[in-house]
Image (cartoon, rainbow, N blue to C red):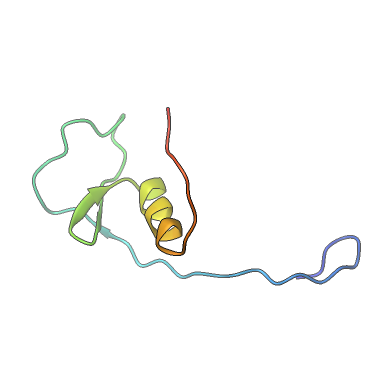
Amino acid sequence: MRLSSGEVVSVVKRHLSLKLWNGAPVPDTYGGKAVLDYNGQPLFAELVVLRMLEGDGWEGVWGR
């Protein structure tokens, strides 16, 4: 990717294939957010991304 400064940088790209959770209902979906199945665990999309980043060695938290 070329920045406006003219510098060229590499950007890692990842393709996500997400499926909806079909297990036991999640009691609080924070206003109807989609619940996804990530390795057999019900998670919201932002937590799926966080878990994937953690799998690559990153650290992070999710807060309200």
